[in-house]
Image (cartoon, rainbow, N blue to C red; front, side, top):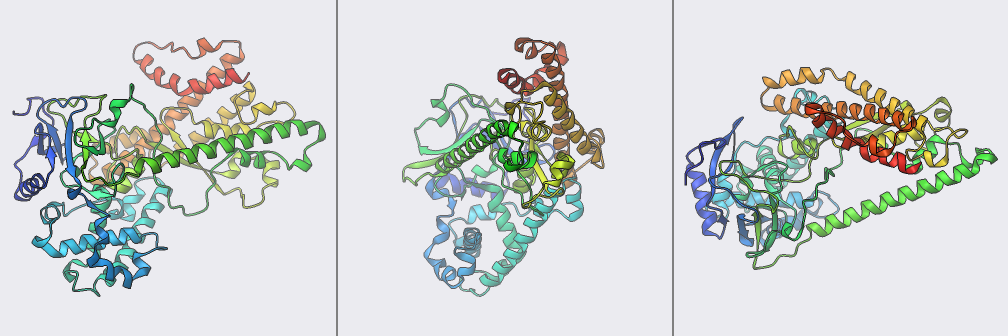
Length: 545
């Protein structure tokens, strides 16, 4: 069936390598929905998959047998064991990159077989130009307007170059295994980028490249992939409603200096004198705050451990001979004819997408603004005078600000460090309770965020104009910083509206009127987002009273 007249993109003829890899993969057991067509060129010039007909909920898009998984299981083949044993410094623990180096070596080993490799049609098809952030120059990176991200990218670039330089020299000592012409740092960097940008890792027994399955582009969609028997329905068919969350799964940044992630006990230590210096009449307040801080930190720790356990279980899947890797249309969506077919690569912010894959999204469900504020900016003279034990006024204090809710962690710091033992209750130290303290904390939060926004060399409107004529790396750099600035500006809007609601609550308004959207038309839509972002905070404020 031909594509609909409203189809996105332009279908182009498949070249010889594309035809060869399709024929080979299908002959080895790949199953591909016949409603799909490839290659289709989508603006601004990348290729992807498109539908010829509607793909309905639960319908399989692609499935592949174990034999078509170019996986980390294969890297431990007997032919390469002598190499690994003779160079344990690279290919064994405690080297943290030993599995990465093994996988690069195995890839180069299969490359060196050329047409004699089982994987030749796939390896020959892979794009020769792969660009991620490690290919960016210092000038390119400066356009991110993010010093921490810039440092992290340079760190990764230098680490990868150094590691692959050492690896190339080691592999050259084994000409019986490798074509020496392939053992350039450039080729090993290319292999590493292929592995990083095209591998599947969750829900399958081993991290794997999967031919044809790596032709789908990324977006925040519900299309799912999993490992199961051929006739099993997608996992989300067991759920009654779509669960939406905004928790990203980004890697940690490589930091230039030590940073502070604020916790409740740290707020007690920074905001209050030592227990021995608390006046007797206030020791009850101090003990109550201390107890609450310990409870909150304990709850936070348990939450992190539960999440880590869940992630470990989620990614731990034993290999089964009759199971297949499958991509299916979610129970909660239909992919219309003529539309591009996306899959979600992961719950990644634009920073992680740019790091791993070399692109960003204009509207990214998991994006955030990572900000850094010197610790001294939060503290009064008395608090500054008490600093000790590794704390300093210049210590960067780091926060993640999301687009969907008021940044409670940041507000909590301003609240606690402006709390007054003489006039405020113990419950109001860590939680929203005292009207005057909340207004003060929100004012300071607004001031701090405005300071960050105005410190950028370009503003949001200027960036939006620059983006219209930007291309390549510049396009993604500008789109990245636009995403960050939009979140910062939205957080200022959230804080301003939250302050307005606190003032109304102080005047006697009840909860029901405070969480009601009174906007109209387009303003209603805007206010709906703002209202949702602050409702949780306002409900907590009223419930604590």
